[in-house]
Amino acid sequence: MSDRLLPAVIAVVALMPVSSAGAQTERVTFDEAVRRAIERHPTVGEASQAILRAQALLDQSKSVFRPLLYGNAGTVILDAARGFDGNITQPRTQSAFNATLSYPILAASQWAAKNQAADQVAIARISAQETRRQVALTAAQSYLAVIAAQRQREIALRNLDTARALEEYARARLEAGKGSRLNQLRSTQERAAAEVELDLAELFVRRGQEALGVSIFADGPVDAEGDPELQPAALPSDDTWLMQRPEVRLSTAQMQAADRVVRDAWKSWLPTGTASFTPQYVTPAGFFEPAKTWRAVFQFQIPIYDATLGPAKRVKIADLETSRLRLDGVKVQVRAELRLAQESVTWTEQIVAASRLSAESATEALRISEIAYRAGATTNIEVVQAQQTARNAEILFAVAEDRLRQARLDLLLALGQFPQ
Image (tube, rainbow, N blue to C red; front, side, top):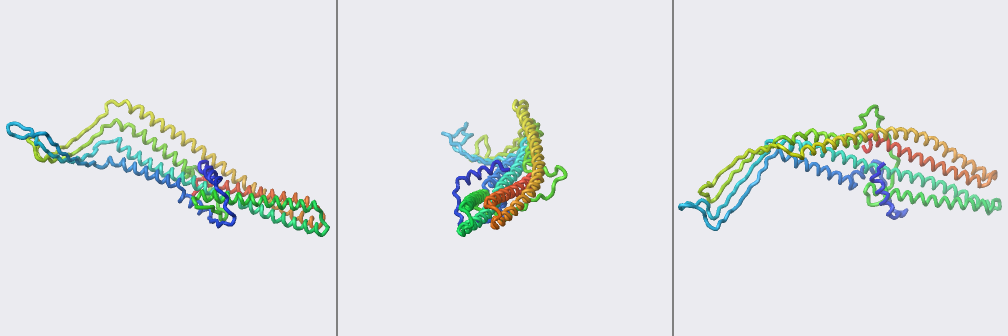
């Protein structure tokens, strides 16, 4: 289940007014709802921005492989020219122009940072896939909630039609002097209760439509159009399906990135070297400073003692071990989710078959009770009881079908096959 996104949707919907029944409601299929949620939801956009940020950091780390060029210009004004024996060594006003081109000829730790930044780009992309999965799951659950509410509305509507027919029959018998006031009152009570149930079912449908509209980032309520096809492509025969789960890929990528950081830690002890070339033009030239000069510098820095490198490596090792433990925990969790999803589908299919038989039998019993009542063989008490039993059986059947759709969705999630 989507523990992060679904409560937010419910909280938003709880503050929304119920739309009028006559308002035009947009209808979408299951696949379209999932697609629109992924395309429009702001959370997915935030994840895309995280990818761009990681890519920018990668480009920044690649600058170590490019030269650095910058220029300087300046003017020095003295109170008076400097010199001796009539020679001017430093003019009163002198301008200098130079440019420096530098390149790191040895920078092992910075070169390693490039690969580490590339790992973060891969992690950001996998995180975006996990975000899309959560958004798609919220949209799918909202869609299935609308389908379930529609089934309850259909049951309530059939129940109301039956109650109205019985009320009309009881009223006709009472007017004809063949019925009783008690039977007529029972029929009226059942009809009124059925109207209340239908109104509640309509309310739940509208609430579900609002939740679906929020989950796909629509401007208003959205209705579900048709049952979704929720069948897994194939059940796994080995552990290759694990890498289809975004959370497994994410934990694996984080562990591999931490492992690279640990393996690159020794490069911090390597010397760093920089080569630079600086041409300069001075005007007017001085006695000791010609107009045109240049300078080349080769500089190496060797770490002899740095008390921070040892503790920093231990921190990196601790991060690596933490990521490995996290990956092991995620694998155990997803395997358990797959086993539970497979068992849930198997058991729920049996429950649906049994509840279907129960509903069909209760409906047939109601039909027979109505025939017997119209023939005068029974009172409407038996009809009311049969009607309540049939309604409860239909509700149980609808709930079982909804649980089966949810179980099949959970199986697709466990196999990493949702969204496509």
